[in-house]
Structures are given as structure tokens and as C-alpha cells.
Image (cartoon, rainbow, N blue to C red; front, side, top):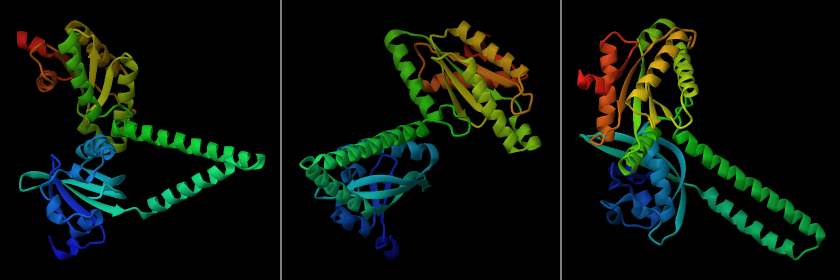
Length: 327
């Protein structure tokens, strides 16, 4: 590490994809009260409290794996003396020499300390107001109302952050990360209770030609309209998500092979008859139904192979993976 980075006015550390610290600058080590060697080859959770470990795994890891970077995430690190240090955390996922690293920069947030002092000062004022006159009690009620409003706003922002982490920003559907979590959940339910479910992969035919001919704004409108149409045609229990590009996925609980084929054909026919983003489009659909030998990987492969068969056989059609096997 060069001397400029080692003594930069911000903390720096680099971790592997499993969270092991491979590099740390002197600024961060000093900020947390560690000797640099005490942090190297340790897990990044060494620098975190229990609550921040949970936050790190719930938000930081999923976000950086999904988007490849994290910008200005509010976080707290823990010093060697178990004191919290509020920071802004920026991270980027990069590959070097065939290994994936997450490089992070942290900037200490001193305003947080000032904010905590304000809170303590407000608490002292509240204690005084409790012992004061009726006029002071009225002021206290106003302070309580302000506090409740801030609490509600914090809850709203937390819910918003959670929704953003699992939502595709273009179509408003669930994103790939949420879909993968729900796929594993449905597989676990199938393994425990043998409740059937099917997986549909829906792909827009000749989507590149739409972008090339009409431009990306029209392509985005097609994707948005198709996403909303799939959602409106699906059951409340179905999981509809954008898998990536022009591909959409649907998890259909309690759906057998025949049910899934009928639903997929209904989707295909109604999409063909509709106008999406001002364009006439068709879709090819691959379907697979969960079996006792399937995993998330094999089920996706089967549905994807069925989609490929639909494309190869002329597009604008539905293929079930089991039909290909029997054929």
C-alpha cells in the first residue's frame, strides 16, 4: 500500500467475498484503536457490534452483490475498546487476479456525535419540563409529538430501503435477489410438505430489434408494460419478478405441470393480443415444475432449456421441460 493511501484522510479496507480483511490503511486502524496487524486476515465482523453485523449482512452484502457498489451507506464501526464510530461507508466489488474483493472507504461522521449530544440535551430539558408548570407540560407534549413523528419517519425510511433492495427500479416488480430468495423458500416448502409449484421464464422475442428500431425509451416502456401485465394476470400468491434484461420469471405456488402450461399459454396469448409500449410483441416461455430431485439450479436450468426450445422452434410459444424429456 502506498504512503498516500495509508495515511489518507479516510479509512480504507479491502475484504474477500467471504469477509476476510486483506488490506487496511493506517488511518482506519488508528481510528479504531487497532494495530494494523491485528486486523489483517481477521473477519470484517471484528470491527462490528452484533447489531451492525446484522445490518451488514442484511443490506450491505445483498446490495453490493446485486449492483456491484454501495454509496454513502450510514454505518457504525466498533473500536478495539468497543466504542461505536459512526461512518459513511462506500464500497465497490472488483476482481483482481481471478479473486473477488470488496474495497471500502469510510469517512467518520462527527455530526452524529453532535446529534447525540443534542439528544442528551433534549432529554435533560424533558426531565426539567416534567417538573415544571402546565405551560412546560404543553411544551413536553409537543416534543413527544416531534419525537414520534421522527420515529415514524425512520420506520418509513427503513421500509423504503427494504423495498428498494428487493424491487426492480424500472418495472416496479420484485428483483432477481428477491426471486432467488423466494425460489429457495418454495423449494424448502416442497421438501417439507410436497406442495407443488412451477417456474415460468418469459422472454420477449426480438427485443434487441425493438431497441435498435425505436430506441431504448420505447424498449423500457415495453418492459414496464409487460411487467405490469404479467402482474395483473397473475394470482395474488404468484411471485412475479424481472430476472434481467428482457427476461421475467414467475413462481406459481400450488401449480402442477398442466396448470402451469395453461397459465403460460394464457400469458402468451394475451401478450400477443396486447400493445405494449406502443409496440406489438410476442414472448417465448419456458416452464418447469418442481420434482423431488430438483434443486434451485436444476429447476432454473430446466426452465431455461425449455425457453431455449421455444425460441428454437419459432418463438411465440410455450414449452414445458417435461415435454422435452418425454419427446
